[in-house]
Image (tube, rainbow, N blue to C red):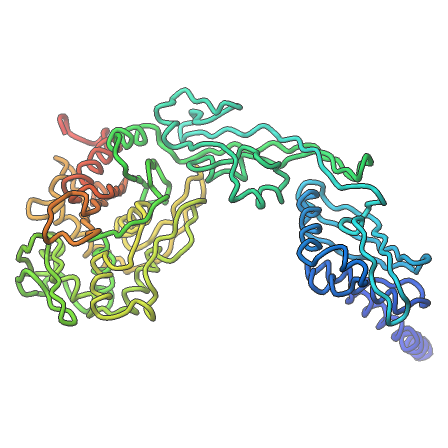
Length: 561
């Protein structure tokens, strides 16, 4: 390029720069104004539609003329826009171009993004009264949606796609067709869940195009995979009798789950008619192999199964070793309160022995030594206070370190009492973390999904906790009822007091828990059970988990096991 050519190029760039800056500002504003006459009126209309873009109905209402505000209240005004948006499944309104005044109205080209009908481009005609700085929007019902004309109402006809099927891990259908049938109904009926209208979630489903009273997943796998199974509704959007948009329904996608029918059937038999919850999981992947009852739909105090978390925190912080000795006693004094062992039993000795016999007089004070901050942090690494990856599952809870309270509250939390509450899914995942040597597998029901993990504790600490859990299921431990001949089982019992048991031995006073896995040396399956108001973990929950472990490992067990 010559010197003269470079000088000419600089002159051209200098002359066009102001125009470029103006274009850039117009683009940044996101809206284009046409012409210059009636600037105040156009500014009014632009402000109105920009407020609409940001869902600021209070500011929109403030721009109406007095006559409009006499005819419609602010709440009615906002409701009218919400109803129209739901009808069209609109998710966003964006003004593109504000036109010039045509008498006492200004046209605005709008883009509407919807869940069902894609992107619509329509004209919104905005009437106004007054002029200059005194101009105000004159509201009419046609302003609730671009494209409406006088006398027209927005409405929609919906066509739902067929609901997709749900399959077990072996390809056997668990629910298919309109009647949601299965060749193994005794298994499917317990895990699939039900369909029905969901008033509490109706606004959410309506925004996705589902009509009121549409049958959606209420619980079980139907709820977990609701969005995938239901597909996308189709239909026609009308302005009066005119068609604004039309789309065909998109069928749902079949859900191939991790549910193992053999293990599921064993779990169903174990639970029987009891009000209970059980979960079985592959600790190496997080795949949920079976679930029944209140597997993740209820949370209760986890009792002594929480001692897995407390022991992990204490060992990880090097506060104790497996051989650390504790006094043999029937109670522990915390903040002047005598916290007793179950039935006033005396226990203590090494940490391993105290864990095996589930000694509160050791673990409650140990929780105090660990401290609220470390205890809560460890619980959260294990999954407490974290949204579940399973749709509809309740979140297990422990108070924050700042709000957990006194030393007694910390000690109570350390043994699964106080304000701590967990689901069978959560406590099963905790046991799976120990089984997987300190990595917490994220629970999943999607067959073939890439496993995900969260590092919780070191491999060494996990192996130490496993030693204690093996001792639980030995002749000296509280979980001996989960023993399986020829197989090493690791586990932990839990008996959570729901009320003072000092003067009553009713089984209704306690929740029964057990979590366990096998074979301990190379775990294949971990299972957890909660039986609310059903006595002791060793008596009720441990035998149930044992039967599920046996069903999962039938190919490895000696005859008669």
